[in-house]
Every structure is written in structure tokens, then in C-alpha cells.
Image 1 (cartoon, helix red, strand yellow):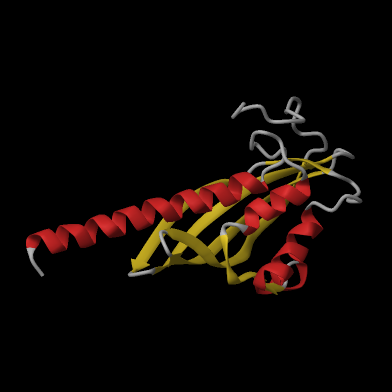
Image 2 (cartoon, rainbow, N blue to C red):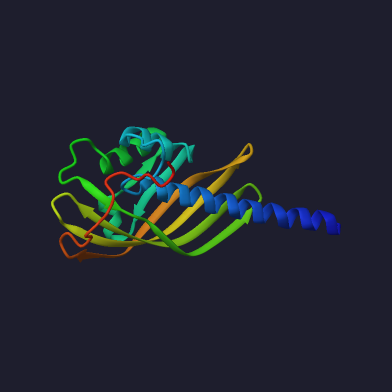
Length: 181
């Protein structure tokens, strides 16, 4: 491999890592409540935006002693859509009113047109009835380059901990995001 070929190869890895980082961050942002996209979208539209990040054969699975029974496994876009509908169903009671995803401890491993990444994420949840919790999970996700775009082929998550937060822990929060207005 010439020096130029070596540099091209290294740049391709850096570009892949950046694209994967963006797609993972977009997934997390789309899962936040309120959803910060502009113009504002319905929960059904939000789910379709999330599904655009996945390959047709993608898998979303919760694993381990806590997530096996809570989340299970969804394969293919129809099952993923059903999975996400459980989070944002119109008749959800109590309704989720605040949820923000924080990612850390990132590692991305690129191998040609495929890659895997690991993260730890944490998210506070607040429901309309005031109940609240703090959830932390490990992620072990997979990606594939299709055409010019990287897409998620697997979301795999395992519980680190879940802890109750004081009721109505957040004193001020938006009901609608206008960040990108």
C-alpha cells in the first residue's frame, strides 16, 4: 500500500466514525421528549424518522436479566415500528413528558463497510403524573454502509441501572422544542 493509499484508508475510517457518531446521536435526539426536530412532528412521524436510520433487516434488542423481558427483540422495520410505537403510543398513560439521552464512553470499530460501536447512555424520564426515573444502559450497536450512507443494523442494549428520581424532579422544561426553529 502506498502512502497515498494508506492516507485514503485512514481518512475513510475517520469519515466512517464521524458518520456513525452522527447517526447514533441523531437516533438519541429523535428519541428525546420533547422531540427537538423542526418543524415539530407527531410521534408517528418521529418513528418514521427513527426508522430511516435503520437497514431493512435491522435488529433492536434488549438483553440481560432486566431488558430481555422488558424490551425483547424486534427484527425488520415492521417489528421495529411496533417496538417504537410502545414508547409513543397515543394512549400512553401516564404520558412521557421529558426524556433526554446522554451518551458517553464511545468506542467505534470500523471494518470496511461494517462497524460496531459501544456506548454507555443515561437518560432521565419524567411522566405527566410526576413519577420519574433515571435509566442507564450499555449499547453495543452495529452499522453498515449502504451506498453513501451508514445505517444501523443492530441496536443492542443492556441495563446498567434504573433508579427512581424524586417526583416532579424537573422544575422547568419545555413542552415543545424550538431549538432548530
